[in-house]
Amino acid sequence: MTYEEAILYYEQLSAGGIELGLTAIRRLMALLGNPQDRMKIVHIAGTNGKGSVLSYLSWIFRAAGYRVGTYSSPAVFHFREQFLVDGQAIDEEMAASLTERIRREAERLEKEGMTVTAFEAQTALAFLCFEQMGCDVIILETGLGGRLDATNIAEHVCLSVITAISMDHMQFLGDTLEQIAREKAGIIKPGCPAVGIRQEPEAERVIEETARQRRSPYVTADLNRAWDICYGLDEQRFSYRTSSGREYRNLKLRQPGIYQVENAALAAEAADILREHGWKIEEKHIRQGLWDSFWPGRFFVIRKVPTVILDGAHNAAGARSLRDSLTEYFPGEKIIFLMGIFRDKEYEKIVEILAPLASDIYTVQLPGSRRMLEAEKLKETVFGCLGEAQSHVHVEAAALADAVKGSLLRAGKEGVIVACGSLSHLSELYRLFLEEEGKAWTERIWMEKRWIEQK
Image 1 (cartoon, rainbow, N blue to C red):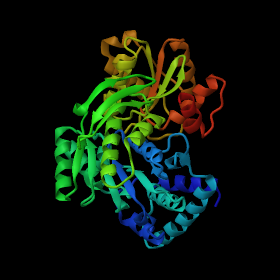
Image 2: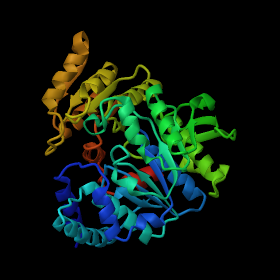
Image 3: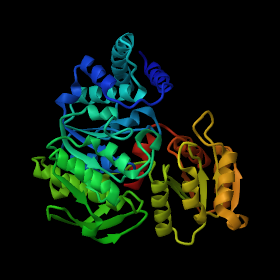
Image 4: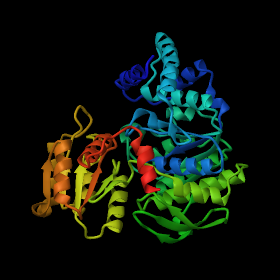
């Protein structure tokens, strides 16, 4: 199997859609030798912030000298970015050879009447890859929910981490915050320590109840224990006291987005717990890891003149976080949105939250994406949310390339362009913005070039 054939295989599996449950993944992993049972794992669930916390913890572990495998989804810029070892994507040859092995066993299961989904196959790929690469610790991000997510096949978990929980994927997880929280809390293992941020009361009750039932020591990262918070586009700082009473002063972040302070506090709290359980993590490793961390696609500044930001805000909570960051960093400045949103998301709420900041809004649709709301329909939604203010905002439905060109013209040198609403179109928009600068996009630029430039 070639790498191109491997990609095609996963695309074919994706056509089967999403199917939550652990029956198929358990059978598949058993056929593959259950590599996940020989790994030390940190498991992360939540609605927003999973990728950022994963990145912070990965860099903290790396600063402490550990070899770290990370599995996250979905892919934004290229397929192999989901499977990183010490920050580097697995190579194509490994991906292809391990996928061939997975396909053989999946076909065997098909003969038994059992279907393997794309996410299950990719989860198997992650475990096989990380075992082959000799990782000391694996950090897993759930794909959807937690209790029935394929990553929950992992039993030997060192720490369960719960990031911010909000309303999303209601068709799979339930239509109340309590139901969604119960699914997310499903990653908490009996006797295994757990940590989360302070949630809405109804979600917090569910998590605490689950932890008590499973006799899991549970603590929260609470910004009430943070002080000297200083937000900034290029650097952010804060001091934090963990639940154990240990103080970390003047921690610095390179990652923008004011919500990153809470994500970083959660990572520091998690690292503090791991330290108490025998991991050789010191304050200097936490400090260095938080500073080194970089997570593209979330308040990702790809250009400074004019400022161009890619942000995957795809639900109401993400839109509020984006709004709050834009208000903090760019008060009173001209903001131009490029919005593309899936029709099964709360697109009206996203528009309602962000539209009041806009001087211009381009609504876009990713070609070939059946899930994405039509640009014209999204434009109508924008008009409906603006009401009488629509006469002061330029709103246009446009193809991606035309939206990029139009936004750059309207921004001039001083404006702020924000592409948001979905992760699915960020890669193509990144390529288009780079082409407007006379630069070529490569699959490594997101992790290497931009990180080096910022560092």
